[in-house]
Image 1 (cartoon, rainbow, N blue to C red):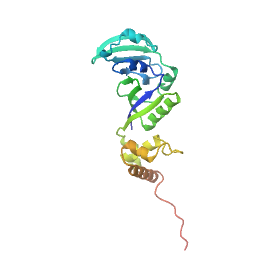
Image 2 (image 1 turned 120 degrees about the vertical axis):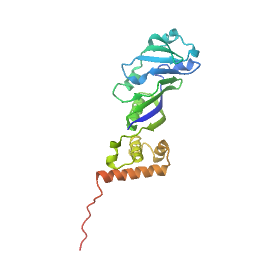
Image 3 (image 1 turned 90 degrees about the vertical axis):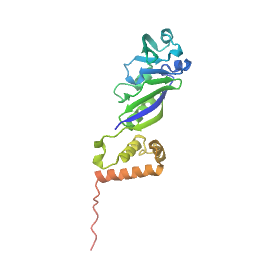
Image 4 (image 1 turned 45 degrees about the vertical axis):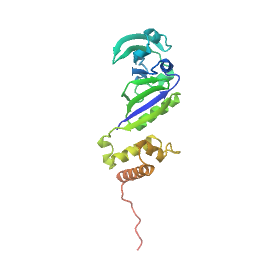
Length: 225
C-alpha cells in the first residue's frame, strides 16, 4: 500500500524561497528538486516569462554556482542550475533513507516548498516528517490519500480495506503509543469519517487481528463435579 501526500516544507535554509518572494508570480517550478538526494545538486527550474528573470539574475543568487539557459518549454523559461545546498538540507534527503517518488514538480513560494510525493505507507511519511523536524525543517501536511492496498497485505488476516487503512493510520500517527500521538477524533478527520465510526473500525480491526493470529479457542478450567 502507498500513500500520496501533499505537504509544505518551510525553512530559511531552503534555496529560492526569498527569490520567489521577489517575483510578481511568487512561484518557481522545479522539475528536479530537493528530494533527489545528497549528490543531486542540479535543479531544472521553470519560470514565468512575465517575471522577466534573466540568466544573470539567477547567477547572482548566493546558492547558485552555475546557470545554463535551456530555452522555453510549455510557455516557461527553463534553466539548469547547479546549487549548493546547506548541509542540514542535504542531510535530510540522503538517498535511500526515505523511499519516495516525485508526483509533480516542486513549487517554490515565499512560504516554502510545496511537494507532492508517493510514500510506501503512512509511517514512511511520518518518519520523513520527524527527520525534517530534527534538522529544523518544518513540514505541514496539506493532504494525504491512500492508494489501493495490495490484496495479500491484509486479506490473510480477514481485515476489510477500511479496517486495514484505519489500523495503519493509527499506527503511523502514534495512536497506540503512550502518551497517544493522536486521538480517534484526529484520525477520523484524516479519513473523513465520524469519531464513532473510526473507533468502530479500530475495534473491529483489532478484534479481527487478535482472532486471526491468536485464535478464538480459549482454554477454560474444567468445572468441578
